[in-house]
Length: 388
Image 1 (cartoon, rainbow, N blue to C red):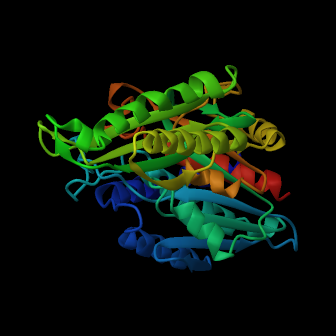
Image 2 (cartoon, rainbow, N blue to C red; image 1 turned 45 degrees about the vertical axis):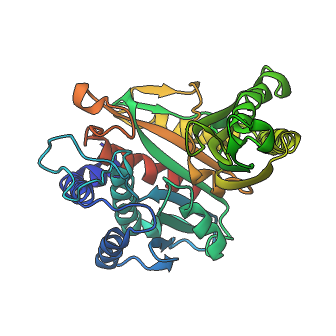
């Protein structure tokens, strides 16, 4: 057994207890005050310096003892979801309506374990380890805080691991290129003029206009996106009108666009705005649109994906290394770290049966806790491979 595996396995009891603490005490995005305080308490106990980022972010800093070298960042997201916990486990959430149903409690725990091991091994590498305990991944706000802070301007590269309930324990997936889609959320407001439905010529119908917009937006992917590309324009909400016999004077549409390239993302945004505005004007209605940039596409640097594959292939306990897999239309704001710098994002299998096979964001989501020590081992070994 390697020294790093021994160190990771020796932390197993600590890792399980820490993960359960976070699972019992989830906090929603941008409100992770207790979580941040706990992280900072643990780092202080380990003797690891850190800097605060915005209100709930923490950046751990470990300097290698062999002098100057690269600066490599690990992202560990810390926020939970507004969702009941229906696992029935002894460590179920103690906070009604909040649940670590995406595995961020595991990511935070693995980040602390990795920090602890690397701090013990700091005399063996050159350069700097940064671990970003990042808030608000679920709403696409936390990575932006770290980027805007200026504290990570000098990183050379970054990486992240996400547990995955669709993969069995012992599996790890990583490949180069786009692996997660972008996510932009739009809200369209259409303002018309009310009238009695018996005298419709006196009104400007916002409901009819909104209906035309919803249908027309479906043509963007069908007629404006290359068929070999992948994209989504989805409408999830339409509200309009006040009464059955009144021409609606307002309507609101909410939806999202998803893409795997920066170019397609930009085109989708332009097309949604252009089409919706044109239909509104055609129907003599006023038009407003608000966009929320939740996340860019996650595009793994091919060279780093290959390096990650080489590291993971040598980890005892990983018996299924997946180098080609179906990319996800789900977004992750880890993308903000890799827009202008190299980076790589991998998936660690966390499922070992029915209780751990529920999908992410399901109220019964849970993990096989054996992956905690395995995740620490992988993170430490990848860091050391990049800082050798």
